[in-house]
Length: 74
Image (cartoon, rainbow, N blue to C red):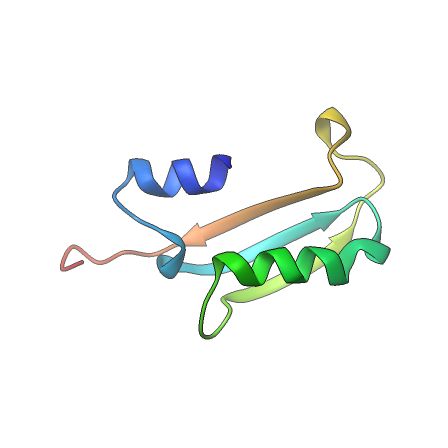
């Protein structure tokens, strides 16, 4: 999982994510994506948008981008 690795490289994790953008090949996959999403985000979900797109790179069904915020005190 690339997002987990990117966060870890900065000493961060999913608890610091404040916003995600979810790009789905089909909105019919939203419920399945949401179940998996809940495995990574506990408590309150970060702010989120989800949109259907015509095509994702490498034939992917879903792509997620995230904005994380971590204070130096963490």
